[in-house]
Length: 124
Ligand SMILES: NC(=O)c1ccc[n+]([C@@H]2O[C@H](COP(=O)([O-])OP(=O)(O)OC[C@H]3O[C@@H](n4cnc5c(N)ncnc54)[C@H](O)[C@@H]3O)[C@@H](O)[C@H]2O)c1
Image (cartoon, rainbow, N blue to C red):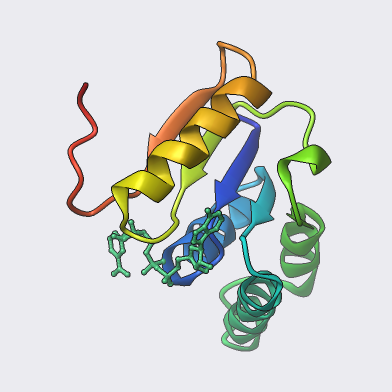
């Protein structure tokens, strides 16, 4: 089972994926090309987890534990190895291709790459 996940893109989908994963006990590295989006993504996760806590869906301990599992990074240099890479960047094939090319050089053959694309064919 994957334990360390890298989520690339901290927009609507990436932040949501990261949130689900940290609440489920995974360690998540979250990155984005824009610092404003990294900050916004992290802030959004904190706000939503606080709301879940206020509603009694998670405890304060669970919220804090989940947030401890979130590591926001500004580049892949901040990550040594992950089990799973999920890209959730803009829906542009050239951007996604370049990103996977970079990640392919950075991570070992055992790392699984996944795309959150809504419309681009991922078969070769
Ligand atoms: N929003 C939805 O309802 C939805 C549903 C299913 C799938 N998707 C897919 O998920 C993906 C993300 O969608 P979204 O709605 O979260 O978009 P978004 O615009 O909210 O977020 C995209 C993020 O990608 C970042 N980004 C762009 N280029 C980058 C790069 N080279 N490296 C790192 N970060 C980069 C942007 O700064 C932005 O924060 C898209 O492929 C989209 O088609 C979206």
